[in-house]
Image (tube, rainbow, N blue to C red; front, side, top):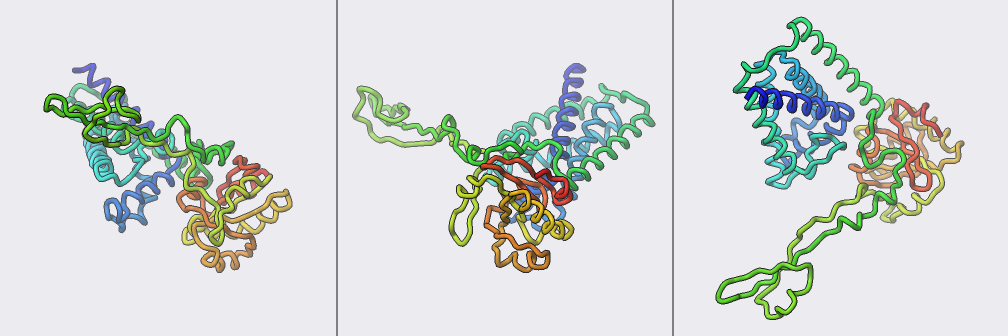
Length: 363
């Protein structure tokens, strides 16, 4: 039992630290996932949506801290109760999402390790069992350091976590796990994987000596058995979505995606939602656009808002470039900033910038 407790303690602690750090690298992305959970289509807790970002920052930092507290054995009762409450909440959330098919990716490990809700639910159940083992065997694990030293470790870790969170929010994630990372060929990433197409099974029903028999094939009836009662088709394997999907560049109902991806040098000015655009970032756009055009880039805008909706915002900030319509989810996935910039050359992503760093973006 003592060996099992040691294993559970290290496994849970390391997993919580890893999960927290992955999401701490991109707290804005995790806040989008919380916002989705709080929406009317999922939990119906819309009043929490404005708090999604501060909640995301608190949860990912708390996750890291709890993992470290567990490993060093600091404040055992507080740590184990906090772990139980947190894993209990997320177990319910992932079960609800999986059973009612509400959210396609739980966001447990950010974009680094995508998990479907059922996978995440199984992971949470395993963690719940391990935490319960630790809960009922608290006498078998002790603190690794004196209370004062443990307090200093937790304080320093908390400060470092807040510094990381501030940095990635004011710039971009330190490690980009998303489909739109630099070096990605957008056109290639939009293609389906031929090895992961939808696979169908055909169930052929026969009556043999009064007993129903089912034979499954990948198409034609079983050889030598043409006299079947009925056939039913079912999906055995779902087709995998391309790494980049739902990305298009449209204007006035016309699709310009391929035409723009074929251009030598294009700079996208991205405003996924005009109501969330930072004023300071908008004031920097005019000078960036001028610099990009002098460097030979065709500069166009991408937004989920229509050009008519954007017009007052663009006029105030002296921005005069054509804007095209693109899916908002794709825009906020591509670059975690509003406004933001992404440069491409012949469809390959060559640069990305938070509005704080427009001046530093190499052209």
